[in-house]
Image (tube, rainbow, N blue to C red; front, side, top):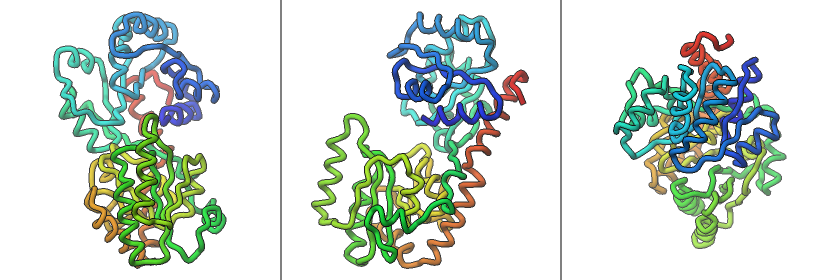
Length: 357
């Protein structure tokens, strides 16, 4: 869904953007609802000669300046389409998740030979591209995902009202987590850390925001059962929320215990809201959080270390305030959507001089 945000950012700056997407997908439905020009196709798997022919026709008729793909799997239809269109249109690929498969065989070399640049959303993804794909280091550029720091601004929200919705009092310390219910997001460690802390502090509450991914309802239920097994009566499950910025305003500390995250949008959002954090010390988190400055890093999958680092913030209102201010500043300086949109436009201008400036 970040693609939809990126499209709006480009249109806002006067660029003409059309979206190639899977027919009847969530992104297709949302793009239609928001008035974005779409070219829906139906393609499952990898080889789709007729789909490639169709896309080649779209490329030829549309006289586009470039193609920017958001998934490496799409190269299997986009590269043949580019060849069939008989154009040398630049092709960019944003890599959102890592791969454990080495793609340096003949077919992948053919595909990636037609990619001008791959944009990695974090340093761990940049290294993954270098390790697994037939790309030169000069072809891989770091471009983080961004957020609207104007929307995620603590000055716009009434903390008292937000806390009252969940039954929190002003003297309680709210530790929040925001993630879909999916294996590896760290819900278990979060709850076990809360269990440890609840025995030491009577004024802490947990707030878990998110819903189960498709097919993972059983996992979500197991997390709620774990809450009961740990005898945690101080945890609120808020479910899916569209007004996440308002929910953030109810928190004092944000926990990000994911085992392996390519980036971490919710972490950046929490920082933009001026919330200090405790995060797992791995992968894309290391591009975002700064240990001892915006929060603390803990050893991933270690609930005791997570509890200890959370307690350091529980015990120090001064650290919470200092880290929160620095977190907000870092979000504005490095992850602001307007700033990153200008960076991607600069890349567009580099690959083709015909892109409007």
